[in-house]
Every structure is written in C-alpha cells, then in structure tokens.
Length: 279
Length: 200
Image (spheres, each protein chain N blue to C red):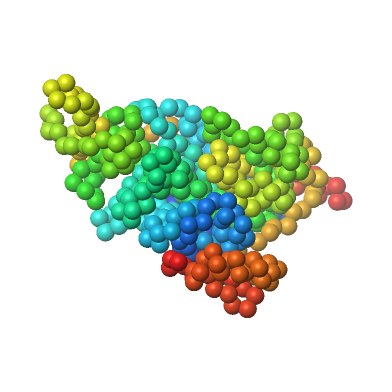
C-alpha cells in the first residue's frame, strides 16, 4: 500500500494476533471444574484449550477448530464461513453424540455442554480472549502508549444482575476519576481485576465490561499520567505461552499437575508444556 | 479482505499539515486511529442497545463487532482499522446469502428461535421440527398440543437464497470519523509541541 499522507482504511479481515493467540492453544481434555482450573498458573492455562468438566478430546478439539475457523474467516469446501450459530450447532451436536448429556436438573444450564447457553459462553469467552489479547498486543507499542497511555473500564452490556465492578476495582487498588475507572495500560490493576489473571478483557465469565482508550491529552488532564511521562511497553509473546518454567512451583505442585493431566502435560527440566491428545 | 476508505481530500490535506508539523508522526497516526476506533466502538455499542427486529433472545451481534474493531498496521503516514468479525461485511455491503452446506437457509420467524440453528432450537425447546410445504416455500414447524386440537407453530422459513440490503447505519457517518481523528491528531500535536517548549 502506498500513500502520500494518511490513508485511514477500514478493512474487514482476520486479526492475525487473535488467530495466533487461539492457534497457540493445545486441546486438553479434563474433568476439572472451573475452580480447579483456576489453580493452574495463568500462563499454562492460556495455552490450554479446555472447557470445565469436559473430558472428551473430540469436543475440546471441536472448540479449538470451530473458534479458529471463525477468527480466521476460514471457508469450507462449499465456500461457507463458520459463524457463531454454526459453531454452537456443531459443538452441541457433537457433545450430544459423545454422550455428554447432563443430569436432568442440570439440563440447559451452564454445566450442560449440550446446551445453547454453555456453547454461547464458550464462544463469547474464546473469541473475546483472542480479541482482547490482540488488542493488548497492539497497545504494547511505544507510539501507541505515547498516544493512548491509559484505558477505561466501561460497561458495554447491561446485565440483569450486574457485578459490582467499582468495588472490585477499589479492592484491587484502582483509582477513580469521578466515577470513571481509568488506569495506565501498564498498571498491574488490569491483571488483578481479572478472574483469569490476564491484563486483557474479558475479565470474568459472561462479563459486560470491556476497555476503551484514553488518549494522552485527556489522561494528562485527568492526572492519570504526568505530562511528558513515557511508558515502556511490556512485550506479549506467544512463545512464552508455549511452555512455562515450573521451577518456582515446587515438587508438590508439579506432581499435582501430573496427576491432574496425566500424559497431556510433559516436563522437560524446569519447563512444563502441554502435549494434549486426551487423558 | 474488504475495505472502506475513510479519507476525503479535505481530510488528507488537513491531516497532512498536522503530520508535517510533528516530529513523531507515527504517534499522531496512532492518536487519530485510536480516536476513530473509539468512535466506531461507541457507534456499535449504541447499535447493540436497539432490539433486534424479530425479538427473542439477544445475541449481541454488535458487541462482537465492537470487540473485533482494532488497529491494524500503523505507520508514520497511514493507519488501518480492522474489523475482525467476518459478518460485518454483509452489514456494510449487503448482497445475496446463498445456502452452501445445505439445500436451504433456515430463517427464524419465531422469536424463540432467534440466533439458533434448527437442530439447536429443537434441543433447547424440546420440540420436534418437521417440514411443511408453504405457498411458495418450505417451512419448519412444530406441533403444539395433540389430536384434533393440535396447532402448528412455524419456526423457520426455508429458502435457498436471501438478498439483503446494506445497512446504511452499519458505520457511523464518515464525517464524524474524520472529525474525531483530526481532533485527536491536533490535540496530540499540541501535547508534543508543549513538551518540546518545556524542554527548552
């Protein structure tokens, strides 16, 4: 593309970083529930394709492929794109064929992998995390941080029973500017408010919160950043997600990971890495 | 890849003047693109507050578009805004949607079926859909009640092709995007100039 001055193009195309983030995951089948997955270090969790309580390798693989197809705008042999409703049909249908039908009292709920509600949550969570990561990566750029050093936590979707985000923000050490929840993009607050330990949204399951840029003139005027202060980008590398050092975790936790995931995880020296393939 | 060019001659001239005055033009382009991105996102948020035509459960299509609206390549001369959700192309350009994997598209007409493919709706609603021949197209319906009192509830219309008009409000007015981008660029330049003067 050649342009003399500015050619601000708006294009509808896959976001490469979102595709790569998702593509870097290894399908891991496990009966672990959400709370148990929370004990797995964020770096390892981010690189695992899992769904709480789902121990079918085929279903986990379907999630990986279906979301990957959506993010990459993949067209099948007939020329059709995968979309949200097609993904939900394929996932719930496969889960039913795999015999993952729930107890009658759980039917249709979030613990029922054959339900629309659960599949919708998986779609929102997986696509959201990939977009959130890609946006965070683009923001971690010297000029981007110069132009937009801060971001605001905003509600983009109303909830019937909204979580108390101002309290969560306050408890995590966040500052308020009027009633606005704003912080520097490099502030640790973003990972602290996240249920998943990631500095990018979504910050919780089925969350209606997201982030919007606060440009430097406004950030300086509000006192979020001192005039002329320079922020340093924190590199987000997918390479780091492929394996993680478990040297600091201790033998007990290492043994626990082995017990939880069997031959789906391998240890080489001080590093842990997903192998996948089903327990 | 499909795209919409967001620059007019006036915009180019004004933006070019700002860039020429800056020692950090890529930061200016970042500021302009990020301002335009926020304008797009707020437009999509506003669109999401409107109920869908059919009614029924919300799928929050416009919030998916919101989250996928991001910055692409940014240089010291131009920037690219990306919408990563493939469904946006249909909103912006309209055009035919043709059944590809199956013989017919299934278009929900029952609000309860909104956002769901027939197989999912059957499972969720606990109903069995069957084919009914309509006047000039097929229908998918389910039965309510038994015996001679039974009624038919039509859930989907079957058609091999749908022609959709472009949504004229899919994007905010170009004028607003340009104004917001230019304003952000000018403010960023002012910050830069002030910083330079303070150093002296």
